[in-house]
Amino acid sequence: MSSSAADLTAAQQEIVDTFGLLEDWTDRYQYLIDLGRQLPPLPEEFKTEQYRLKGCQSQVWIKTEVRDGLMHILATSDSAIVAGLIALLLKVYGDRRPADILATPPDFIRQIQLDEHLSPTRSNGLAAMIQQIRQMAVEALSRQLSAT
Image (cartoon, rainbow, N blue to C red; front, side, top):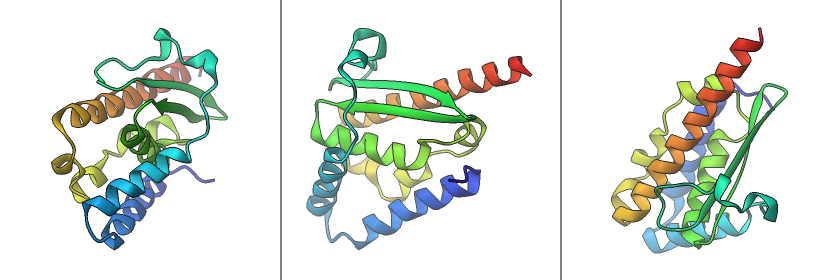
């Protein structure tokens, strides 16, 4: 899969289009829950304090590694809706180049009005997940640049 910033923008637009097809927020929440159920299982070895995301009321674990120049992200949550939020973020940012992740803000969140329909604690958790992904991209990019 190509991993340009245009691909990230296209992935975000696909999410906006999908949410536009759903009638109301009950359907959208169900879609999020369904997405969360489709996440690949996170190996138990990564469900430790080292990988736990701070700033989330729910339990969230996130692990990244760079393979072939792309940032591979594994993550899960003990909350169905938060797992769905993770799935949305992985659709946009999973298996992408760190530079493209950093160059592409998560505009889809505002476009689908997700920030207006989440509880304050879930909004804070979503912001923490985005911040963590971006921080990991910064670190990966830094390692790539220092290796050249």
